[in-house]
Length: 505
Image (tube, rainbow, N blue to C red):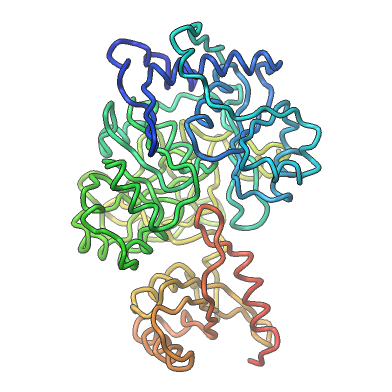
């Protein structure tokens, strides 16, 4: 079924006329109004000459107008590409070169970025205008152009944790099976309010924050700008969402912020966490502080619906749960053979909504696809009860002094010390060229560096094998992160190299 048919195909019926589709701080939009606004915008796009298969780049704040223009783009068979308002010249140039867009839709806030990017100078532009509400009763019915599964619907852009951003193609594939988790566990449906703290250009927000709620007739709560901690608490009070989608970094920040109203946090029925691993100690502290739980989930931009998710009855601390509906999973070693229970392997997936490629990089896509199975590059293990545990990326499990070391294990163990606000582990060669562990930390309390380092080393001596302990500790005020909150490992390695370059071993 066409993506737009799933979202708006039956939303004009009497049972949906007054059901709320989108809520902002100032206004609400019913499904009937959304359908009519999309119809007006679709006609406008066609008048500019946009045809099926054309690429339309959308660059603007997270507003109902952005959602309307994106849905209208898909409704007329064009390819919608929402990109981050924090993209700079380098990222915007990649978007322009990979897509050769026929139209660029923007709002006033993003016009300076566009004008400063020579690669976008030739692209026809269209203002992201608000559809005239007075014209809604006079609009012609929405006509959705049929598109088959092999036709592109939209492109996502990865957040650039390991370097440049990367485009990812997604077609008009049926994702009905993948919605069952949202229905059965998160209890989405008409009248249920959802709020995602990530921004719409990113896979997590695009799927869980936009396509899933609207496909199920739920209420999507939107905040236009990038959120600060105070904004999250305020919006939770305003929106009263039953379902909140966020990240471990933000959950930890909310717990550590004395200004957070924990009574407001306790009123949410379901939290989901994705984008990075949810540490078991963070989940335990959250449950104690709010009397609610967090459903840890795992997905990737190439298969952005949940691949793994904690079931309604819960899962062991630190687990990413069980395979979500629509996903098949395999754990393979470096030879391509299945690993045994309890062993770490590389995760390969087969998914109903798997991407169809990387624009301009067919070899990179083909290298990660084997007989319909996709190599995620993530490491997992599965316990005897069937629960899955994230063990980092393919380059985060390595040998140090001849022994296997998991960098995420070192990070999580360091965080259980109570000494740190953040921690990340990377590898750096010593003067003999042998790889050793570096722990990059954001201190959680005011102490001089030697005293804190001594306390960290002492704690890790009690909890980690000798070969897993860091040789160096580097202090920073904040870890380098992407726009979505993920740690940028390549920047972290550069930072460590700069700090340690002049030091002797």
